Length: 456
Ligand code: GLN
Image (cartoon, rainbow, N blue to C red):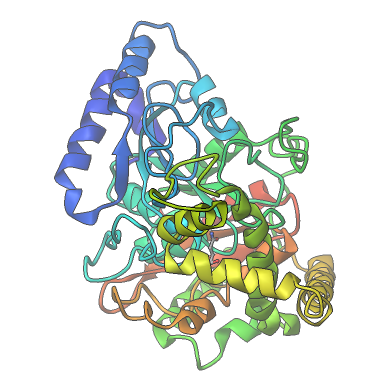
């Protein structure tokens, strides 16, 4: 697979042109919603002329279409933002551009990042890079697929409850959900503000680390950002690793469990101590997540009212009708479901029973993670209970779809870093990822551990 260092020897214009040619040859995957071709070629010429330099000079990349970026609309894969031209760029994009990287296009996602299969895009489903009858995963499905197809060496995504890790595992690439607050979310369409994170897909852990280190750090326009800890972190190798027992039950696909066990064996061979651990609160993770996250969504999505942005319903008589019709036409079913669940759990009389209980449970979950991190440097387990499922298989059953998030939502609720690394395939050739979770700010350490296990 292509790596960032492979771009050292070709000109930026050639690199961008090659990426665009590969996009044209991969149209059937429907991984991209738009191209930023003109701007990309202009920037590439500037790199070749020596006007733009940096650690990623001339390296093409893709962003999920919920990042504001110049050169193409930012739709968040929704109709309500169809044709929305960003007036500014996301800090993450700006930082990569400052190092000479070149954004070539914007990837498909579940509308507003609500989903785990990219089937909720208002513009059609993205197909899995290995088997086109299967889902790409989601919500950052398009970004995972362009990385897996070697169109670009890295692509950005957002992960609120698994949206980078799960598609990474479904397509056989590395995916990083950093510590909450690592990368500024300024200029990225908000989903759930207490768990939204910006991360990347790459083909190696070292490349992912490089990209994360460039994006990380304080940004005064996002008050939740942490001072850059990526470079400062002491890279002590992980010693003790726990396998999360709750994730290895019979409900989990046997081949997925086998790949995790093999990965654990490899870690043991490399000299790590690997033991089974319990994280009992994790079984309530999906329950907490699907109360807290819709609550935050219902608030964050209130701004899409048909007046300030995007699509506005026509031929309406009253203001209420304008709001109602614009939102009805502009959101997909899953967006509406979450707005309704969120409004319900926040409403008077139900707030205590749902939202407040979920937040209390979240604290207990965080305590359990913290207790484990006193003894263990990292925890491992599957990313998803199954490999990529078939397109349409879970689409009609939201609860089934939500339950598939069981292994990723807890790290999001706890704000801890979690990465997905390729760990082989099933007998059908479908990729399986292993998840490595660490304590806050151990991101670079987790990536170093993953890197040490990669075959060169
Ligand atoms: N699948 C999860 C959800 O639907 C995660 C989404 C995400 O991380 N954006 O909420």
